[in-house]
Amino acid sequence: MSFRLHLCTILIAIVTGTALCGDASAASVEGKRRREFIKGDAAVMRLGNRADKIAKRYQLQDGEHLKQALRRDRTLRLSIKKIEGPMALDNPADAEDAELMFVDEIPQHALSTGGADLPTNPVATNIPDTHTFLLHSRVGARGTLWINFKGETSTSSYWNDGDTVTAGPYSLDSNDDFSSTELGNIKNMWLQVAEDYAAFDVDVTTEKPTNPDMTHYIEVVVTMTDDWYPDAGGACYVSSFGWPTSPGKMCWVFPNALLKNTKYIAEAITHEAGHSFGLYHWSQYDSSGKLLDSYYPGTTTWGPIMGASYPSTVSTWCKGDYPNAGTSIGYGKPQDDISVIKNKIGGNGIVDEAGSDKNTAAVMGGAASGASLVVNQQGVISSQTDLDVFKMTTTGGNMSLTVKPSAVQPNLDFQVRVFNDSNTSLFTGNPTLIGPVTITLPSLAAGTYYLEISAMGYGDPLAGTGYPAYSSNGRYYISGTFTGAGSVGSPTPTPTPGPSVSPTPPPTTGCTRSGWNSTTCGATTRKVTRVSIL
Image (tube, rainbow, N blue to C red; front, side):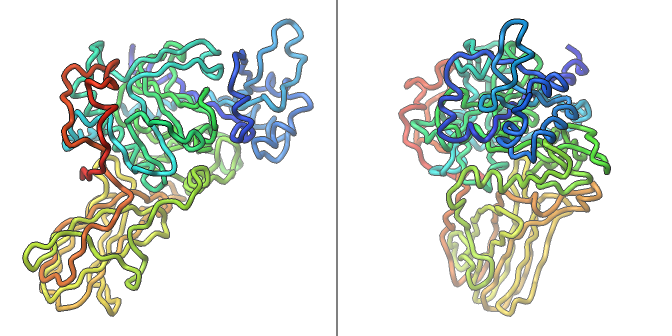
């Protein structure tokens, strides 16, 4: 198949109304029901006198706005129970059953650059292959996002018209064993998705959860079995993270339609999971409100995760800070991605590593080495207003530190500032784009010094030349030395753990795709611990 044929694939994202997010969802997704999907004027005709009621479920202004959206956006479908016979078109949609579905085209301009034009994703060589299916980004989090690379069986009426789907595992060949390349790809995809969700109280994991809280859970299946959705890149119901029962409670990602490109697959995993948290697409309009593209393609520098961010160097969450912004619902429709996800997860959010000024600063983590502090500190910037300040005390000496973002597809563009007790800035650093900052301050006088990390933007997002500070959230890592340290701390507790591993992991030999969960591979019996990998 040529690249051009691959570029004409479709990405399915199915959208359900808020009525399916509560207790009523259990009854809504169970049972064998055939459905049909219609668009444009035909869909408007089937709305009948139920348009206002259906629009209300989706928090649209009224039925006229819903009708306009169906006529305007070629990717929007009305999903309803299938009615057989010649009278089908005369029957209006059931307001409690009708759903909206997007049949979303992967824009050609998003994939036309191809994998060759993108930097090669680094393989996480410091994660042993035997730990590939034991990775956790935030053990004990309120929510769970399980990335299932090992295959799944679905009998839900909401997938494949109710016929059983037997989905095979992620694979680049026909061999039953996961190759080292495939395991490396899985680790890197997990790292990328974990970075995308670093600011949220959700555990991104490759290990199948045991008895998860289904009201705070979503599964994303990555499978090469795509014959039941030919030429599709992915599928997910909006707000399905909140469905309390299991039927249909999963998203799908199909690597074949994504050129088997590791970055693209990880982007799709994050994107589909984003739908499960309640997010719609970011679209592109002209200044008069005419829809130009169901996805905002972004630029080579930046693109929104819920748009078409495949070729962009940086892809992040968005709230509409780009020219003529709008969602798939309509022009100028606001959507604060971060707030939507946090509200869907609920709870109090993640624990902040440090205060925002010198009075609430945390002691810099590290280990004593003679009269020096060997710094080892990590954390998360979770919003554009989140400042993390760490303090270090010295009898006099040198500061030599490096602050780095995540190594794989980082989202955090940060500024680093060092100041003293008088709040006098001694150093300020911010890379042109996302990258490390190196601090060298020799011969410091005795006293306490503070290191501050804050979110930064780049360029002018409203002119289409950058991204706002809103979009900068993710992990950071501080390392280096501070001589003459008079106050040495231990690493501040952090909500950014690495993979869960066992002290004596089993060998990969004989751990096939179909048998990885067996006791011979150890994945179901080992004790989970938290280990930093970066």
